Amino acid sequence: PLLSPDNSLVSDADVFGDHHVPNYVLAFSLLPKSAKPMAVTFKSYLYGGSIEPEAKMAMGLRIAQIWRSPYVAIHLERLLRSTENGKAVLATMTKGADKDLKPSQRIAVRYADLLTRDIHGVTDEDFKEVRAYFNDSQVVELSMVTCFFNYFVRYCEGAGLPVEGWALKN
Image 1 (cartoon, rainbow, N blue to C red):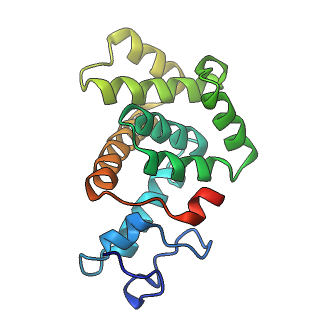
Image 2 (tube, rainbow, N blue to C red):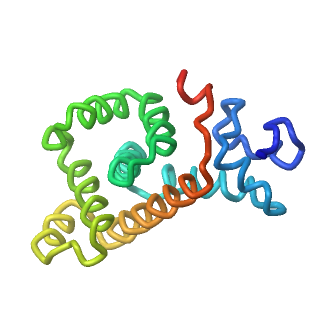
């Protein structure tokens, strides 16, 4: 069973400041002193670095779609709905119109898609397109975000985490 979000072991893990501790953090709390680092890691992958958070959320959403992870998809959709740019990205992806994303967003999502489906899936031509929009450190960032969300989906789905009622309302 998951801890209560009110438990002192997770009291400092509300890193988004929205008075919610997601089940992916609560499950991590079974490892001593791990809840807050997990919450911080998730937030850092989205908001750290130089690539816009909405592009990284879109990457994670595509990975969740590929692996059919409703839990991860719901959390990324919730975060996308928190900004105007995110709402536009989500509406475009919901319509299946990736071609209508901003070029950098479209390329980031495609990169995540290619690497998720096949670790050798990025051809020289694909990489050339990525390099037209992203510098070396951003390519590393794209790769790390892709790796993180592939891990995150496996963690959430492997743990069988139930979707929080509050996540469905946001």
